[in-house]
Image (cartoon, rainbow, N blue to C red; front, top):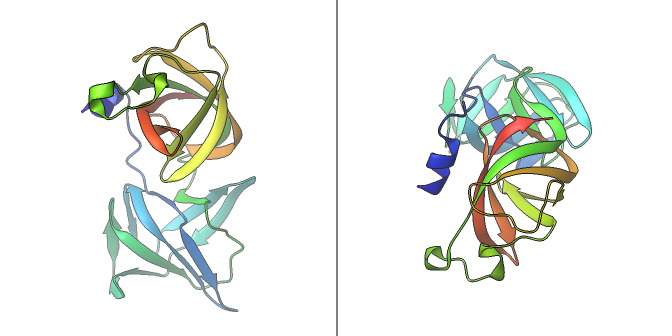
Length: 193
């Protein structure tokens, strides 16, 4: 696939990472759910919540549920509910990950591939992008500006992007390029600034 050829040569982080899709808290417990995007998580792991202007909230995973069943470990692709035996101030959209494994930034360097018409791109940007860009990383869409734009952006181009808000990422993470609710290309993060 196109994204696999883009990622080739970039080390994808194999440490645990998950976007928080839902969170519920009681006076004594916090329930965090989502799909594991990289690595694995074990009961007893000390992890870090970051993103959305919050960095480094340390949490201990006391229980892991998959489909309501308690397990000791969960892996990439599993939809999980992580239970923390404490009330923690976290919100949907933040990232929970292995401590010190991700960087929160709004400035990334990328390599992109724009789909051709026969690959499902029916928009006019298959050969050209203006300076605005929307990327979808882990089902979260973030807007930004391409800051090293010349006249045209071609597939395979190295593109610097300044995002409108901070995201929590690492080198090797892939993303979709979105225009008018349609995926028009893919990219991979090559450097985090």
